[in-house]
Image (cartoon, rainbow, N blue to C red; front, side):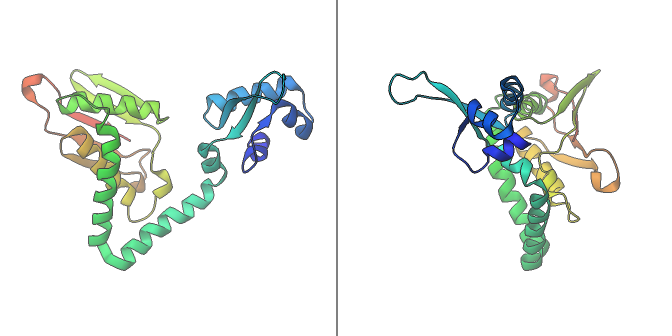
Length: 213
């Protein structure tokens, strides 16, 4: 966190810069930077120096690092936005916003999905989610496909109106191409939300899928 705070809002810094500011060894700095780069919190670039000096690596904080630093603020702002939308237009406006946002986000996944059945599309979508850092476990129990999504991509929107749950449901329905029903919710004390996907193509052998988030 000390390295991240030094990199946020400043020009890219070299290992030598960080050693001077943090007063720790080069080994300690490079080990931490490698972990931060692997986690997507720090970006490494090559910088060419004037004259004949050898190029060096410089480091800067990513957007993910900014989100990490200001996570508490987001937990206040996003639910407040949903409350204001509900106060202005009631349930009708809230649902309209959810549907429009869901369509925009679903397009992001649809561009990388090629399957023709709900089961195939669901598997492809979970693969994309993993690439984006979402924790997803997939199980297939005698044709019953279960996806256990242990982290919620929209946890920052978690509030009493359950707008995040509605958004999740709409996105999966659009991306998978089948109706989605929520059967359990974090709001009710369960460890995760559970959605059921129906409408699989029987001719293709695709099973009904249960989606755990």
